[in-house]
Each structure stands twice: as structure tokens, then as C-alpha cells.
Image (cartoon, rainbow over all chains, first blue to last red; front, side):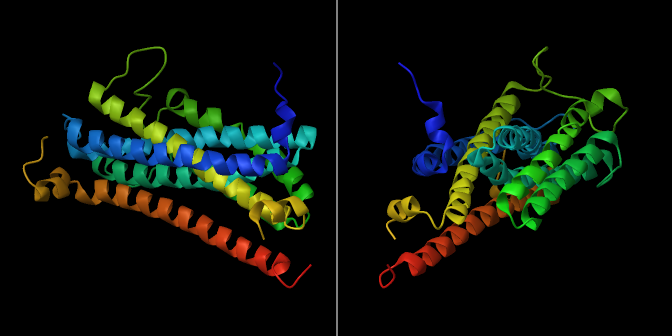
Length: 244
Length: 57
């Protein structure tokens, strides 16, 4: 059996597929979010050192992970669009970027509100916080550049170069807590060793990670459909699909 | 369950500002993102309807 992978590389065939996929991610996002919040607030115990303030972890860590991961995916799609001139790849990159920026903002905001009671400061210019702030600027720069160029294909190419150059920042964020002396703690969860947190805390956090993941995919699919509608508004297939 | 009452839950052991400040703003930005997308979709469909709707070819 052979699958024609290129079939869904065209906006025309991906548009209805994306529409069908949205509920398959949005519903799990909502259900997992509710389960995660329940575990986070009612099952996970009070932290012995931080008291209840640690409960910010259930959104802070998932948002921070997503902010970095989405950037990698944006750069991947943007690079693919640049290399193979596939319109849909570039649209995927544009569809993901605002959600990545949102995740970065949430990570910074919740981190600030977590830093105040635990470190005694809202903000500090240490490596982890500064590189995460640069990530927010990279997202904003990418979106601004894409929006500033009228010709969509040229906008795709120029913003793709920016996205690819910015990738260097992601490992800097991730390893910043090892490379420099930072106020931010090291990773509590890693592949190489057992997590340094209570099991219920970890489970609650991981459930929230999957919820954020599903939400990001659902929202990106909704946005890519809107981008297809905007760019293909004069084509006959879209009028037929939308019944207008 | 480690909360004695709803008030105790809302107080978050004295960290209410930080915990609820985080969760409320996160909920807010998610709601704004979804609302913006829904509005953009409505506008686009309405515009497409005007262009290719009854009356035009």
C-alpha cells in the first residue's frame, strides 16, 4: 500500500482535513485540562518548601516547554517552505507562531508571579529568563516581518530566514540553567534520571503538558484554515467547500 | 482533598495573588486567542459570502 503524502501538501486537500481534525484535538485539550487542573489543585500535595505557590508549575512548565517546542516546529515548517517552495508549509509556520508567542508570554508571566514569592523578585536578568524573553521577541519579529511584506510568497521566504536564524536561541534557553549560574532552578524532569518531584505533582504536570499540546495543535489547525481562506479566497474550490 | 473550605482554597495558603494571577491571566489569553480566531473566521466567511453570494456570478 502506498500513501500519497503529497496529496495533503496542497491547501485544497488539507483545508477539509484540518477542519475534521480540529475537534479531535480541541475536545482532548479541554478534557485533559480539566483533569490536570483537578490533579493540580485537589490531588497533588502541598509542597514542603514552597507551600501552595508551587501550584503555578502546572501551567508554567507546560507553557515553557510548548514555547520552545512550537518555535522548533515553526522553524521546521518555515524551512521546508523555503527549501521546497510549498505554500502550505509556510502557512503552517504562520499558523503556529501566534500560539507560540502566547505560550512564551504565559511562561514569562507565570514565572514572574512564581519568582516573586520564591526568589523575592518579579524579574532578574539571568540567562534563562533573558533567553526566554528573546524567544518572545523572535516570535514577534517573525510575525511582524511576515505581516509587513505585501507579497505573501516573499513574506514567507523572508520570515523563514528569520525563524531559522532564531533557532539558535532554543538550545540556549534549554541549557541556560546548566551553562550559567542562574537563579532559575535546573530541570526537575529529565530523560536521564528519575524526576525530583512527587508522583502526583509530576502526573498533574504531564497531563497539563498534553492538554497544552492538544490545544496548540487545535488552534494552529483553525488558524491555518483561516490563512488558506485568506490566500485562496479567489479560487473556485474554496467557494464550493464553503458553500458560498 | 487538603482544603478545609472554599475560602481556604481561594486563599492558596497566602499565595492567592500569585497562583490565581497566573491561572486567570492564562485563561484570559486563551479565551482571547479563541475569540479572535472565531471572529476572524466569521468576517472571512461573511466577506466570501458577499463576493460570491447570490446576485454575483
